Image: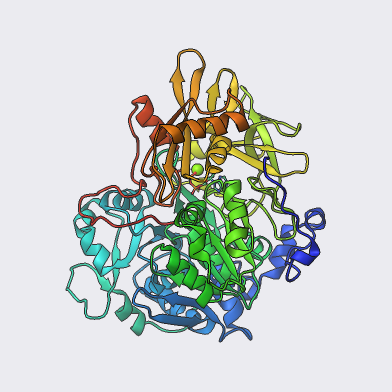
Length: 601
Ligand code: ATP
Ligand code: MG
């Protein structure tokens, strides 16, 4: 709340956004109406995500529009029209049927960002199977654990990953895994037992496919959470989630048919599926798939050359770009950009405002979780931005700040600016339908008709939500509740600071005191003087009760492979506690795996 509101006057909008009147949309909202904007399977056979993503356009005048544009590592570009995508996904659905895949069977995909991943995902959904992505930099352990929990029946992967991760040796322990399909690069061809060639099967499969009747409540997606707070959970979603994918693509990301859209999240995570595959296609745009990893100049070049209109990325990427220096952004033409959006972690106000400096547009932060299936709280194009706030709930979603009671219920906190757990009233179609094989844990997320998110937040008088931290990360110091995000954001205001992670450190008097871990931007050195400057800045802005007592400099902070700072690990190390499940920690050397550079924002 230290930053000035970014006012959205009608003149500052180049075009009228899809959502132009937030209050009116909230007041008149109905999910039934959203359902009417989708087509549904012919003859009232239900609702299928892939049909809405592909056929909805392939059967109409947009058939020749580019659905997917793949930018390969070798500089090659491949375009897939909606019509071509229809054919390829039909073929893959036929392949699955021929391999004995039934409704509800789990089809896992472990691949880098290659076109086959998108074809497999959509083809699996057409066949009535459940699509489950696995992040390509996982080592053999996390791959096997997720395949086992999810009872994967089919695995689509590349020959390279199959060999490097030594997946053949895992199969004995995975009795449910019946079929392995390998995507091969040209010239690659080793005869591996018990595997099929993805392209060979695709080539002989029929190009027509009729999607079987799909109930909106049929399972469609299985997504493992990021593992930021503990062992990853497998959240399941149903086909009806497509209503939320569609609506948020339209209202939050403001997607329009002629748009070039780029979501930088890897499809191995929920954002990379909901917004890297489904939402853009359902909204009929051209969706970029970028095989290469992060590199500041490369990303600026893609934004310019591909004339990207809407860009959806994450705080970790934004911080990396900021760390590289704003000068690096100079000289590029970003005039096609209409909207910048961010998700995954809190976006510090510094980052929101930096968007204006580098691109001429602020970043629009939004909040959601694997469990919510789609964006729930957002800064909309039509609304003023309060930097540091997650924004306001999606029309159709009711949010509240709640306190759990001892009797297993909740009390809603109506007063503004009070901390509490962020709760969402059950009823939006993308809410997860279970944690796979963890029913009790699932049920514990609900009380009195509300889903409790495990995040602490507050709501201000204008209805904007402010993230404070994970319930587990909140610091209790001398009777105060301190959210790490607020402290981190102040430290980030210092020009030397690239990243900050704040935890509670045990203290005999206060219970906990605030300790900050800080990594610095290129060109800055840690030292006593800088430490004192940072402490003074924090004390001045936050007051002595909330400011860190201690600052430790680190070259970089531990992060999940999806780019989130792992405060639980900083804390466990500080407290001398066990480090817990590290399967999603980035850059851990794993046996049987080359040291991938896998900072995947
Ligand atoms: P796990 O549940 O396994 O610990 P995770 O919660 O990080 O991992 P995800 O579902 O990928 O797994 O992430 C959702 C969480 O990320 C949210 O609950 C929230 O804590 C954080 N988050 C996402 N977007 C934002 C945002 N815009 N502002 C603040 N926090 C965010
Ligand atoms: Mg979570």
